[in-house]
Image (cartoon, rainbow, N blue to C red; front, side, top):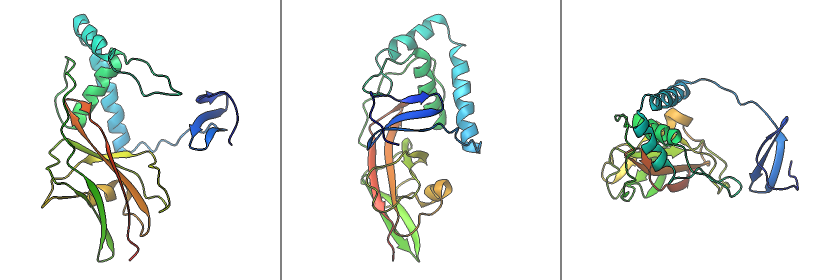
Length: 221
């Protein structure tokens, strides 16, 4: 339910408060389901392995991560944020590297200068009545363009819900990257008339670049 109160977020007893598009909302606290899919277990294992790896560093290496982390802040909540810890930055960088199949690092890499992301627009067409989802790529997406998306939503939705990483962008053929298979593997094929949101960002040396967000309607006929 929507409430009028001081700005707040997080759990209070058996209730949870959060900022929504309609204002401050409070609802009953519900423990989310944990299907323990292979993807979930793999992510948790990567996080656990990275966190344990920080303990194997020398003191000078840990200090280097702490110094580097102090320059980067957490995602703001209620207008407030704070610097990352060395452990948080180490885990972030190395889980990203693991996702791309690259070697972990013990020295914090400098923030790279990101090139323009390859995908520039989203196209959805029907081929024999089945949706085909592609990204227009005037330039090659390379091997480190990460693609995220959401499950199909109603056509009237204009604000992207939380997106889920599907994988890296397939190679473009004649300026178009077909992401139908990775979308179907993650969410199933979208229903005719529904809307989907897709995003793309570069991941270089464990750092993530700016995100480009696209949306499109699945044709009805």
